[in-house]
Image (cartoon, rainbow, N blue to C red; front, top):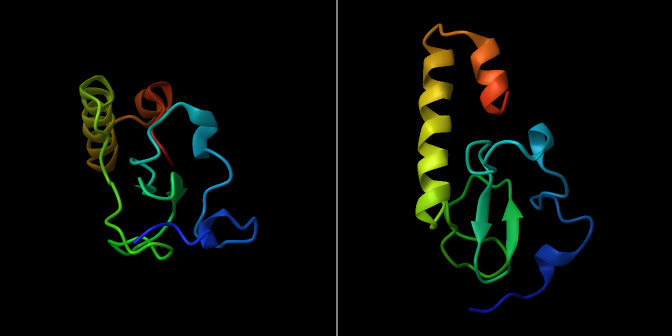
Amino acid sequence: MTCRGVCRHPEYRFRITFQPGGGRQSLYLCGAKRCTSCSAWLEYDGRFCPCCSKTLRTRPRNSRFRRKWREQILVAVAVRAGGSAAAAATRGVCA
């Protein structure tokens, strides 16, 4: 199915209009998902896009960004396990 334009509406509740954390971390790490059909970033708990019903991407496709994403996940896990929050802040992990 193609994009119906619902996600482009400015008051659409799932669309991300800003990048959390000032743009230093991956949107995927903050829980955002990307719809390739709509070309939109969404904060949505479902697996499929509410606009076009296509599967949402939850990981980066590019190998360089995927490597960076994996590093950020390891830092986030270390912080949750009792690591230093300062190290996470310098790496740009979403709070």
